[in-house]
Amino acid sequence: MAEQICPKCNNPSFYWSMNEELTRWYCHECKYEAYENEVLERVCSFCKRKTEGKMKDNQNTYWWCSTCNNIKNTEE
Image 1 (spheres, helix red, strand yellow):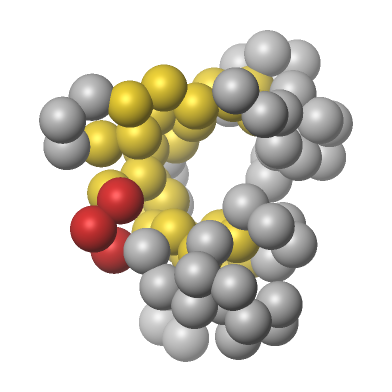
Image 2 (cartoon, rainbow, N blue to C red; image 1 turned 45 degrees about the horizontal axis):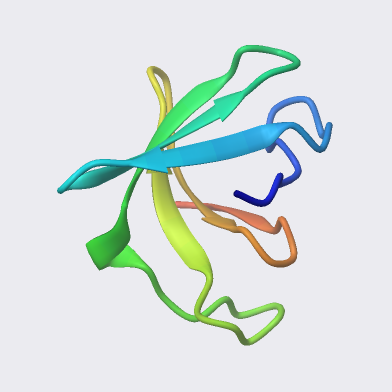
């Protein structure tokens, strides 16, 4: 499992685990947790790779690219 940059604290400590429906992301530094529905993955408008997923935490829903770490509001 590759570590990713956490969208909350920007540390390279964001890891994932999967079940049948959702991917759970968890930061070992700041304890941030979010969930991603793999069905909603799309091409990132910044890096042009299909690695942008719709993330949901206990306060927000946003698009996050696991390749370039770009974050977009869900209204975009």
